[in-house]
Length: 349
Image 1 (cartoon, rainbow, N blue to C red):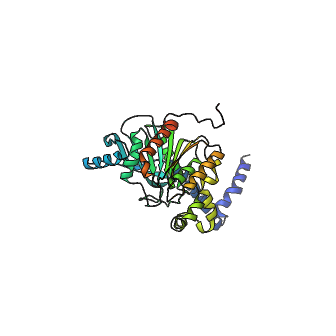
Image 2: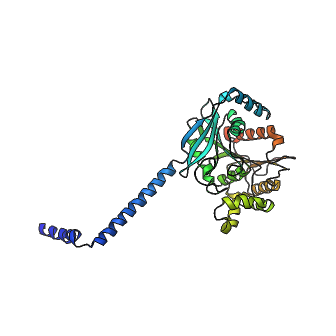
């Protein structure tokens, strides 16, 4: 038995010492190294993405008395009294797909178990990018109302890593604000809302097709039909879509469909009621896009409310107090208070 063991060992061990060609040994070594490298990359990537939503840098804004007065007067024009001493406004850098993305976090100075809202900005690149003023004047109004508000600049903007795709992988920058809010010690993560304006409306629709975490959403002057957009405004195709959307020349049709929620209302999460706001005199996003979108939502049996502001421009600037009131009432109802969804079946006397 002992002899058999020695024979077995010798039959396999001896060649490894002296008979296997050096080139074969080198191949085995390289394969092993390749496998190890792949495993490290795989688990390293998983580790990075596991951190999506993590805040890696933050800068809390401090305001001089003159700045406080300026912002207070700006917000007063909207029919709201703002108290900056009771708000925390921060520029943040957070992780999304492993990229460092810039954004803002605005919250009340006090309170726990707060509802939260993800705000999706409009524009692209530096055009209508979030600013300190916007964070205070627009996001601060929501925060003062009792919400923690998180907003993204989208990847590649304002010093962030990566490159935005106008409704492509940059939608992940919106969705990765959900784990950011999940980890916020003062947020009740069961009460999340979403609010997008213009291009941010498109981002909201795209996000709602991929998550059921949002209890209520608002879309203001939102793009819902990219085909209509590039037809009416050729400069949008030339200067935005063609420059930002990957493989635009070869995948134009598919890219437009993917960014046109009016083509796929059935994909939107059914338990997220949507407030759709638009102005009948909107020069940038055709009001007909909103009309066709709400018609699609109606046919899909999706809960929504639609307000068309007579003569309203793209920003609904003539109706800001009414817009703010409609937005907060909607979010309070479905996000803060967790109101049940309405009965969409025909009923009544």
